[in-house]
Length: 440
Image (tube, rainbow, N blue to C red; front, top):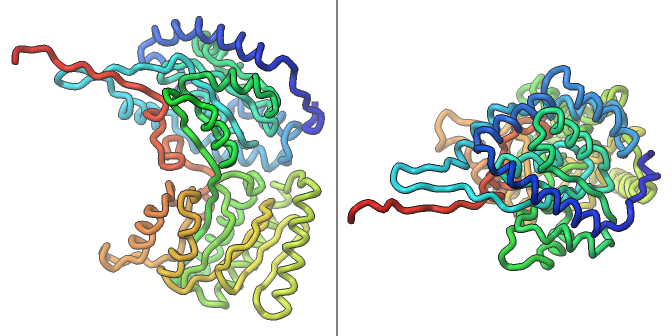
């Protein structure tokens, strides 16, 4: 069935309640496994997905292009680069560190939620895979509500669970129902723990429907940026490498995820270097279109891109911008850091800032919505006291940025990165502490 022909089944609430009943039975067997047993089983599933010749990754790449807007080449590259960057052993280390269950005196017991509902919200597969697996490690069965933007990943994940461990497979249910099916949503949101991804409006709506004793782990609207500093102009090869890396970050998943750069800020970069950066990014995007073509763009977005291009051309005529455009990409070099619309779908703005203070001023309105920053060319002194890079990264951390990396790596985070600044396991876990009862 093609992306435009998806039909959600009726009777969503009944299907949710039936799935909930099956999870209740499966949860007993899941919690009977030790933490190490569950962790080992989940790690093996991840190994199946991240292996060099993974049949699961290959099958997902072949089916996503019919169900999502992305082109086949873009999907294949995106899956390969992201999943091959995951290291199952790092997930194991992270779980052991966060979920340690004993102390020298007394003890701490992991108390899994009876079940966890995962509400997915995007079309990129990796968050769906990871958000479904984490509660299983903790010992909580998962009911995953699929998004219409990706109706295939959850089903394939379920099959990979079944191939590895029957207890994990029985502890995972995935369902689809319309966003307007309030009864089905209410049934799904009856879980003691809810992990939700979506717009801020979606997160707020879910939060308002929960009781005070329910746990909500929200992942709302976030976006990412690039930052290139003055030293980029002193290294022509480095400038071209950074520009090509930014282009790859933009092309991956057609700039549609929270790790996609929307703006690249140019910190004290000379005008001639800024122009070369813009030109090289545009040329790199054009080169990538052969192996990673841009996918389907809906008419409304096409109209927005056309409008922003037209507006940029008018500013170019008055010397206020430079425009580098191709059939499937747009790069606008602005002359200021004034916020402007971001149509995405390989539409990138470059914005100059002349000082660290100006950068902070430009980013402060977006505090709490920034995810990842890719940095290159920012001076790094021999001591922390004279390092602009250290100062800038400290400023970014205060603005709630959860990951700082290099151009070309924005879309390939490690599996244990703190998404939205949160640990992986403790937000979806409960603990009970028992004091020792020795003599006073």
